[in-house]
Length: 318
DNA sequence: ATAGGAGCATGATACAGCCT
DNA sequence: AGGCTGTATCATGCTCCTAT
Image (cartoon, rainbow, N blue to C red):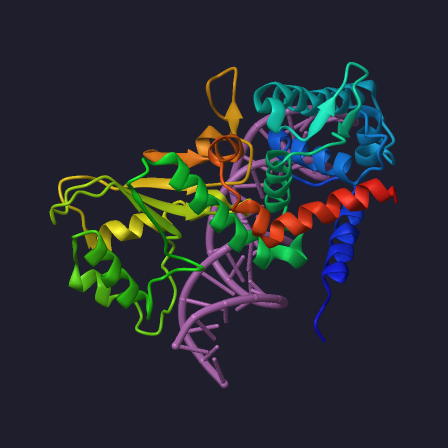
């Protein structure tokens, strides 16, 4: 009854084929750019052009007036503008080449970071890679863990609190153990509000802190949440709950999110979708994750296998 | 068996823009 | 003005998964 890897993969390909045009909101060009990159990944080795995407998105459409047609044309150009930007900002990490002839194609030889890029791309399209959802979300947490370790000074502590956690018992017990590790006390009333039968993590996936040898609770602490789904906005409150459970001492924890989407807007030196990102959050998005992933964590993950399968699939030229 | 969590789909509602 | 249409937002519910 076990579904094989190949079956799952084929189901994903089918999911992708069934979507001729994803219906994100018009302004979400990033998401469309991701979809275009996926199209290039699953095309045969010839790559794709703006015209191919035009056919895929609007092939059936009868235009009543030229204005609408122009509007769609500009929309497509804006998407490819984002892709041109990505070529520049991701440099060697970018797994695609976008040539002078304006063909988007997968590079022939991909290094680990190129594959990690593809993994993040796939993880941000869980509706398509639905069959691998569990693998992709747990692997994303593992990747985020490794990134945070690389990002923080070498003596800092980084722990997984979600999947693969070393903390045991129900949520209340996990939080108590964590408080102990951090030399903090818990707010008993707030903690009593957590169900005894809640065995999970209450929205904290990873935690990192800069330790001191003393037992004083005054320290820099990062509370991290990993979110693959498109609704990462709505998960931003999750780590805030820990400000109720734990009595932080003279410092505020740094709320942090890991997101597989590409959010850096180079020209503005800010984020795309900036209005979705709350105050006082540190964001690790696609570009930053690639910048700080330096060890071999990724190569041992299921998502690495999935990426390789995609590449193999593309080269077989179906 | 059960609870909790992740993520998505769906449907109701409100609203802006456009046509007549 | 009235009505049509596409779009955005929100709450709800569904499915799948995991830990106990």
